[in-house]
Image (cartoon, rainbow, N blue to C red; front, side):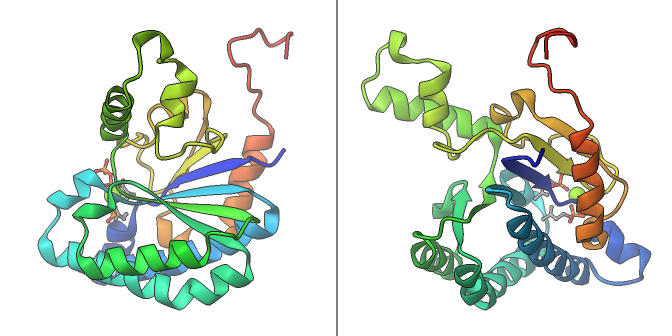
Length: 231
Ligand code: IPE
Ligand code: IPE
Ligand code: MG
């Protein structure tokens, strides 16, 4: 079975570059190319929701010039890919607080979201300035501001106040580069996600590597608390 929602932690750009004697910025550039190929592959495979961890709230702790390079790559990526996203019928969505971004970045993100808002073959979520804990705090604040009573707060209403409102929880979360942690990614939504870790650095994560992960996923038995005999 194909996951309805695939979420990826695109990690290892820096180490990929270091191993090749290149700069971190070259690593991020190569990472962008890898992302492009994965988006197209997921669209072809019929995956309806793809979420890419693009910039975490914690990534603000990185050197200023690296952050500037990441934003510049994101801006160029969105400008270059707008036509292709429309042609592939892919809707762009953002998980995270956009208001902290420089004006130019906000503008291009908003423009791409608007131009692709009616696309329906796949939703591409970019987790940008994203933190799972912060998302939960924000959801609580939203519900309180809306005057909700304690008894109205349920797993469903909480879920509807997350950035992923209306989308299924990720069936599979892939993390590249050998690290085995969530790094504050989709904490609520990942409750029953299958996890796949690979040592491959993100720039080397080709559509073939994705197929390996998807093949592995099809062999998993998802139990959701039941016994192996019940499912
Ligand atoms: C992932 O690669 C990209 C972002 C987090 C923006 P890294 O930059 O984290 O690469 P490593 O982990 O240093 O190799
Ligand atoms: C997670 O990668 C965030 C993104 C891929 C955007 P990091 O490289 O920031 O994660 P840690 O700090 O190693 O956990
Ligand atoms: Mg990293």
